[in-house]
Length: 471
Image 1: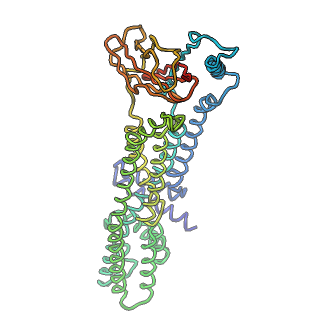
Image 2: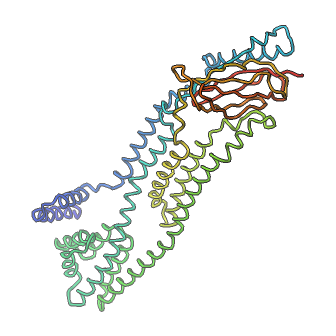
Image 3: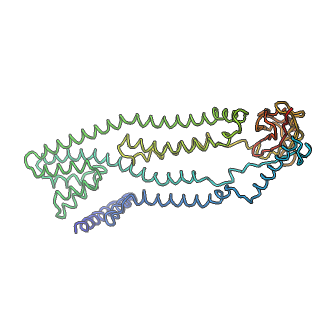
């Protein structure tokens, strides 16, 4: 009964106001109020539920897009890749038997093995599931984080204006007006964002509702627990008799003091917010330094004989640090909200800021693109492949390499990266001359058997083998 009368009262008031004001802003405002009164639509339906549905759709889309690539990475026992590996292993066995002169031994000239590997184009692959997850999280939390931040700012503004309302109410009551008339007069004035709420109380009382119920409805509509508590004090003071205006003035002073203390507390906690932001920047800088300076040093050490196989070179540190930074951004933002404002929900805006800044920074620092000029280079081994030499000593011939483009023209100043396993020494970086040629001396390791030399430039990797025997 009361709810229907509230809606009817508002529609009548809204229609009168619309006749006076023809601006689009006023029309939209009253339309919003009328819809909320009639259907009681929660803000969370737009700021939380719909973004969550959209985020779920994005995750499912990412999963559907990446499923073919996930299954393609699984080993296929009958696939051509495994057949090539078996053939390679068989050749290595033959080369090892060649050293001992077994019945399956073959001539050194027949031991020449070359393989060209073209790296997969990362740009041709769709974004990974981690990318879809990041975008889904941002879409899910950003609208709600913005909404509750704006709601809190509006609530603070309403609380500040409510102290002014209480002060004016006490002055009008001191002048001889009763509480009902005082509220009606103040509802006609402009008290900022508090004015629509005061009009709710004035309209209810104009249609016969009690002062107590009208004021409680007004305070509840503001969404502020502080306003609700002080409204209860005003209601109790209006029934107490005596110096009601003095009691209301006291409420205004007390509420203003509380707001001042809260502002001071928030100001003191801002330094911790800045500390968290600086800590995130430091984490990004540390991860970048590790990836570009320290870890490549250990990667190079992994190729030496005393560390065995270069397992560390197969670890994708950039992606690992990228995930670490984004996870720290998410939980760090929630901690900021809990510490600074007492509720993790208010940390969602910090999560959004930190994740966006971290994502952009990592994209530039860790995945900022490569050397496009070397992507179409082809590697040709002029000489030196399939040699036989003694362990711990250089090969008789240098490895001579030629770099050409797709049309067969020599490529000058192409950078070649070389490595040898299971041990030995080669020049790690070579640069081609005007004829597109470079060469390096190869010192075999201390382990007898087949040694594999890898030459890489851009997306192309060429593998060749040589044989190390005991002296």
